[in-house]
Length: 103
Image (cartoon, rainbow, N blue to C red; front, top):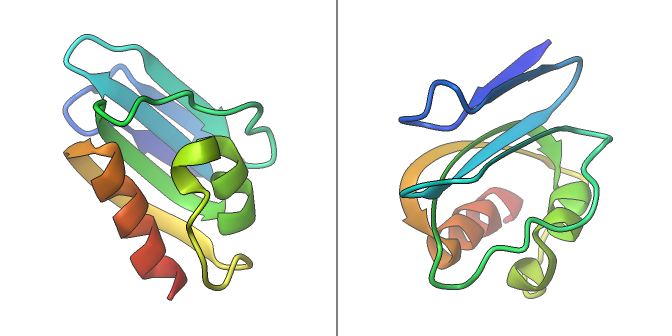
């Protein structure tokens, strides 16, 4: 089991049998959570959005699809699983942190 809670937002949480993701768009939401294997659609985040996010063991190829256009330039080992916890970061900072894990 894997639990993800968006930093600073204890009610933005999810527990999944495998990987998970919890994203809170600062400062007023929404909270978005999902289990790996069931990430549907894209997060539809804007470039100016600030987010708090925790993800555990989310396959990179699945995550790239879920982030949509924001992740179009990510490269590296898409078979890796991504785990990170970041509070109040821009979409660019989030994508950069994911890129570092794929290198």
